[in-house]
Length: 509
Length: 97
Image 1 (cartoon, chains in turn orange, green):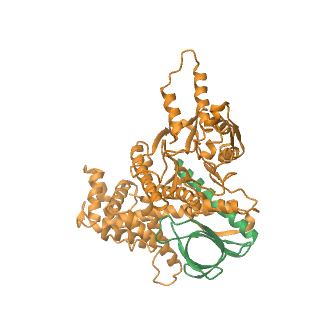
Image 2 (cartoon, one colour):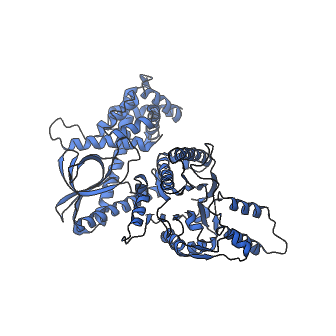
Image 3 (cartoon, each protein chain N blue to C red):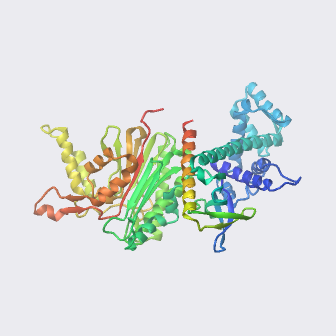
């Protein structure tokens, strides 16, 4: 069950009535909101009445779409059973209910049995249970839960106000500060409003603008992203997303999507992709991000990407988008990709690893050759690896390097993204790039920048280097000229990087 | 927690918004509100931020003046950043506990 939705709705109800109560000085004053929130919770469990739950429409719709009364009944039963030992009853009814739970537990009933008995009774299936009236049990559970929840939130709000008032310039004389303690993620804000791309396109169109057609995002020096139109393109088709999961900042998502299919459709396809990812990740239960549930997460992610694929195919018929995404879970990071946007990590051993395969014919051929190749006995491992890296680097000079074999919007309904699972403890830095970066920078350059740049500046540093770097083909000859471009000029394409600076020291806690 | 209110802007347009933060300033003697767009039927509610000084017309209805001096603008930016930073620190602390 999504407890956040339950608590948000409960708190909205409480807040609405508390505010109203403040404006009433006469005798009919209705208390401080706790009673109304308790009643709303009780009515939902007993009568499935979500209307009384909150006066705010969106919260009510949220309750009706996402919570069942059974789930809430079981959750409340669990709460009261688990906390029975620590509750100090404030009334005779509370005393009676708590005593009944403790008595039945001491008689050998398991907590699970007690919870289920209580849950069914709360929903009206029995008039009494454990020697108590069912309505009394529901009243007590709903009021104790409401009090615990609103008290914690109120304390949090007060602490936040205190901290902010103590931080800002005292000259302003800030008083009566109330804040909704939800951090604003400007990256998400701009994605949802469609402004991430349009801001850059508008800057590009304005010859007098003093700004780069670029966007930079930083969430606590932990998640960073930088995207730039580049030097040759007139419109941005890359989209980038960094965000925390709403339940906890320990869970994160990063996405880079590179639109294909030309002006209008390419940018819309990539925006559609990141927008769908924001909404999906926001509604994904946190339980999916626990260690050991990666297969379920993969299935849920695939299903979502299939929906995006279908939407793009239907709405933007000639457009598509590459996709590379990473979800940082409890202990592992799951990476998914379609197309030629790449994920890399700088391992704890100081080495750079590419975590995704390009959906590109020449990359796949290179990989197949090198996977089947045996190291000759007279060659050192170092020389063998160097030769492999040299041939890989040649791929970016190929004239057909941008011909991809898979993209969202261009696949059938059975689309199968690639997945890679990496333990969080294995890396210091995780990076996602559009081909604007990887076409202009060799793996060696990326590794050098990553190792020697302060992580919070890394995304911007990599993009800026990719915009200015000029690479010369390291081989010559007539045959080479037919296959390869002799020079790659930096910034030939939209250029985007998303970075996760893994501050964890890698030790299992 | 969502706090939804009606806001009337400088051009007399009225709409529903979600309050992100409100406070009073002794320096200017005014009350300020930072608020975001709000869509009733959409859970992803877009997060375009607006800010202005306000007077309360009636319960849950504010008349907002979004024309701010550069000093007011600096003050609001500083408070917005402080809220984001402090909220994150509190989340981190809770997470570690």
